Amino acid sequence: MSQRRRFEQTDLLDKDLLEEAKRLRKEARGTVPGVERDRLIRRARQAEIGAHISEWLPSPGLKVSTST
Image 1 (cartoon, one colour):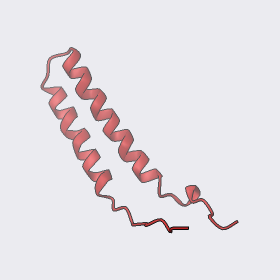
Image 2 (cartoon, rainbow, N blue to C red; image 1 turned 90 degrees about the vertical axis):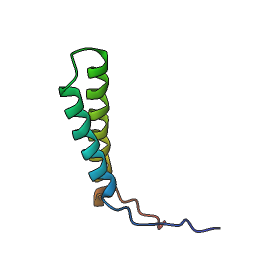
Image 3 (cartoon, rainbow, N blue to C red; image 1 turned 30 degrees about the vertical axis):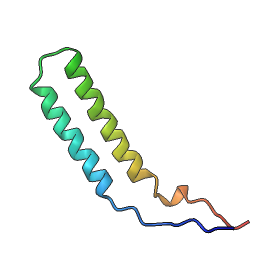
Image 4 (tube, rainbow, N blue to C red; image 1 turned 90 degrees about the horizontal axis):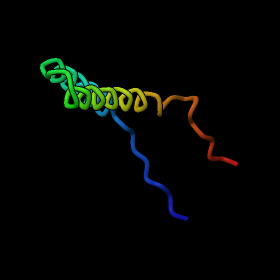
């Protein structure tokens, strides 16, 4: 059986997603209310959620024991 390659995920993804969310919210503030503004806010929210999930995934409570 082949062994899976594993690597350590850095926190760059979290930071990138949060920076993207900040940029999108700033852009939304300069946009008139409407479809485009709603789209920007939705994308910012998705980036924030992605950052939180990325922080949450490596938590010790989610580690699955592979020895059976």
